[in-house]
Image (cartoon, rainbow, N blue to C red; front, side, top):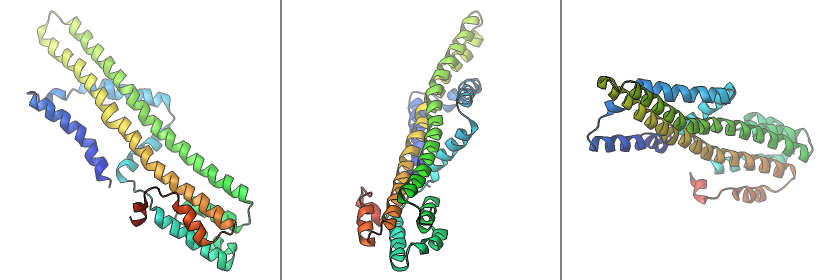
Length: 253
């Protein structure tokens, strides 16, 4: 569980509600089902129209990663690759076919099997980089869904505000109905801004930040596999792969 993400989810809302309470307001004033239907439903409809269902599933996965995703352990990954390099040097690359069954990541398995089969280095690189590119494209599509929702919701909030003001103008002769129309108008705007700036856009940003480390780990796998295939020494491979670790403290995590 990423507690920082969990705290961040409620921190903005908490300060907003606290500020409202300090001004003499209460939470009940912000609970408007009509405004929620207009903004939430309108945003959902716009996003559904914009993206295929596969991208929605990826977007949901991205949200899960925000809270539950664990950063890759680069040092553990490097040591795993070094282990493969040592065995390949002692017993030959054919041993990697058996080792591939216990690989910690599908990309590693793909590379180890390709090397064991004697595939050309260019082909091995192309196969692994193609798989990496496909995953990156999929994640970027999911993040784009969240970003788009963050772009649509403020506009839907404005639509909700206009609809509320229309009701106000049509009921100027009935003061009892003015309050509800004005409430929908302003609350809809708030809903649109909150959905965009405190949920959707932050979700997209954090998910992309987390996946950036995952993609770095996959780049380490590609470089490690190609180094094994080139017959480089385990010590040299280790030094080369450690260059991917920007923060050396990560090696101790």
